[in-house]
Length: 331
Length: 256
Image (cartoon, rainbow over all chains, first blue to last red; front, side):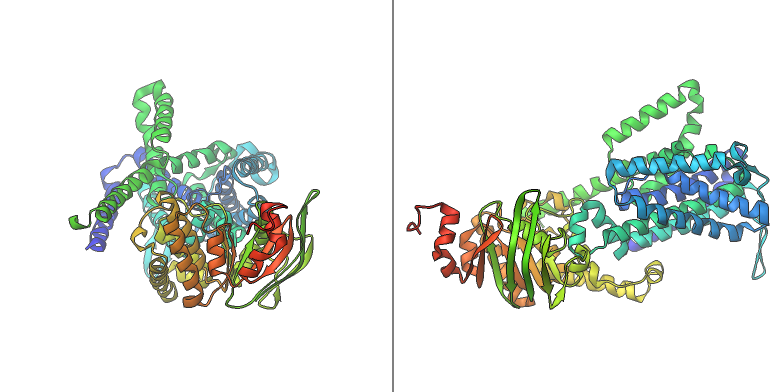
């Protein structure tokens, strides 16, 4: 019964998502939804590192940027198709992520946060100053759209925002699915154990360092793929997109939504991509309202919106369990 | 089962553990006692890889384990609990114990992503065995509680349940009875005894509660200022003048 309800909700959500381009024909709205999808991937990949493994990273935009640059350079200079470069971008970002992870994940808490932030700054400096490769602050333009995709008599053209929306939806759904399976496996168990109590995790046989590096690598790799998608969507990239400010932006999304849940990062990504735009009617007060709202949420819902709801439901369940135990006759 | 020879470590000028020999046989309940600061917990940390000794060697199941990482040693079946209450605060009791089965789960990444047969079989097995351990430790009614919401005594039991899930051959318990009331202590004694009987697990115990130690130990070793000052059967050790002196000071020799 419970499973059927879940499937029904999932089906309804999916149908709703598929119809969004029909409901919002304005380019501007569609752009926001495509960006929401990219941020969903970024938020989920960061949640794997920060939320589930408990390792605070403030350099996530660096992997996003590495993916974007690798993908853009390969297609602009060598004519590679997006369908190839997105994988190479993911692998490249994953490899860098792995190497950085091995170096910095022995650090904890604030030290790790500061070190990853500096890594983010360093990557930004490379984007800005290695002009022969990256064209510096001028960025890379003329990135081709994904080539038409022929597969088994099925033609896929990626031209309009609606096309990107569907492609992004598939991408975000795939990443959600991957993260879902990971966190519900022995790997997810190990990550949660490390987040909760690394010493205790080690004492029961969990190789904490290996799992932290694994989460960092997968998170970085997925962010790299998001970067590739971004590059072939906007068709222009420059260093200003991949700053530490952007890393913090993604971090705020998962804090807002609830980073220890699967749905929280998605909620945070979509909401915080769409909300600032709707606040435009408030004119110059926009950022003030946005800032105040964030502070309020973080103070009163430290587990994030979704995390707080979840813990509220769990609390209800526990309370009823407690009553049942104390008053067995009421069962 | 466990052999330690000449283990020594010093922190600065303090000799926390000094040439301690220890030999625990299969199926024994072996207790380590001594005044506060005698080096008992430090010795546990040395045995389980959380600290590296300056000198000495440790054999577990006839294999040298010195220099290995804690998780490797745990994987061999040498599992310890901690003196402070060490649990997964934000995980439910059920989830915590399930985490304990980590080393017995092998499903590979592809299998995990497609939720393949190994992954599913593993999850079922873990669920079943988790229930078994929760029933064994009397935590079944608390399955859905978060670790942090348990009463203290149950948290201590949860730490043991978690250790049991990790399939120990030798279980190192660091002051499991600390802070327990007499009823809970009695439950604990029964659990420790049946850990050996039901699962055939050898137990090495640090404990201050003398009643508990005397009633369940096969052998006892006494540490004082990092050195082993006595070893033997419970009643022998209790009579040992050096032990009495360590605990009560000179002049109380006849008090016991």
